Length: 612
Image (tube, rainbow, N blue to C red; front, side):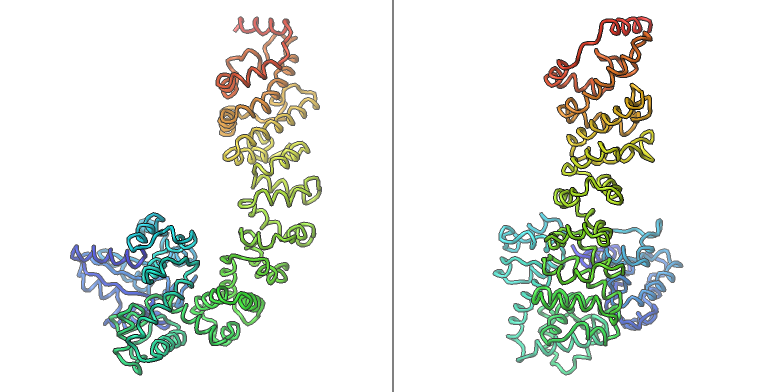
């Protein structure tokens, strides 16, 4: 269900309880209505909605519903200054705790508008009820109930219809049109417009559809609002307007205002007529005052061009991004449209010259490179060039790092040529494998281990090899076998360093951390138990080497080795006992390789056990 549908259910529940209810929509007010009283007058009320509901309730429970609050959002709203009026109402109602207030806005606006974010975060006084996309199975059920087989629609269409508005528009289409796939709301609206126009024109004079919708779009754009007074359409016959209202194309509100059934349809019709008239978006914005109202129109025109004229779309996007006459909030709209683009190599080629300076716009343009489609669009030899250029590499590499999430093999291939590089590349590769380890980068991590890049750390178990443990923890969650193989290399490296420093035990010498009982130690045990073959192949040789070296160092003192001995001492780590018990075949294979200990050290171990 959509926001307004849920609001209707809440209103019904309150009325069933006998509560007075006053609902209104913020998209029915205009930019000048910045006080609660002004909003009330616009809605045809005698005073502020808050004052009126409090007076009617007279101390009893009541409900004030503010729908379409996102119209006053500073993120995507058309009349953000009108939020002051909502503030007035909420302040006035602090003296009336019997009045409950329901504020309805889009999630993105609640999260991006600091005023709404602050309001939603008031614990104890505000409770948030988020609505997500429709469940995929619920969409299939609705489609089947309407006579449409979900199997005839593509995956993109089914995902599109998980938005309640999109499903509602789709459900208005003819049975034949409901067997067609749609990639975007613009495509849905194009089909809806074609069918609705043909249907209503049976009852309208010639050109009435075009004349009415065109004047309505022009008036809304001029007044920067999504509804207008009904009287502005006086030159049209009331019967003609009634036909459009009856068809659901227009909504005639109780306060004698009229508008389209949804603001996005207004934006679509504006974009369609704008493009068909051959108008230039840059010139329109440069001379229009560039109010926040124009953000939605800018988006719709760009999306219309994207679907109908890709070359003009690229030209328009570049001109808007490079013009000093276009304000930042509109350039950000362009960037947002680009982020959602199913990009091609031609798309990136048009933007590439703008992306490589230190400016804010250039930095924002590089951002989409981290997205799958833009990575693919730019992966035509460009990444190799950027990484090889000392000036461009620091600008491109942050985006490349994020691409590891969806293209781990390709990113590893791109950085592989720099595995032996020194200077900035050495630290950059170390940081990358610590943030984005994968099975594809295991060979590179092994190279960095052998080179000593993980020898020192500033945090983690005993402060040793902290970077490696971060790699291990992340890799163990998804690639346990690879994690164990790298752990074997890391442990062997620590043992070799200890021996080179004259120590037989890398744990006593501090070259390796003690992890028994720690979260890392537990993770090692769990990962080893899940990958017994790799543990025996890569960890057991280290255990044997440490046991032999430690045993030899302690044998002459007549005390048992403080590390691993054979047969297993009671202090043998549980993970190793588990492996030897549960995986006897590979264990036997490895035990046959263990050289026998001399009788003298063995006797010394037995005597020490007897003394204890």
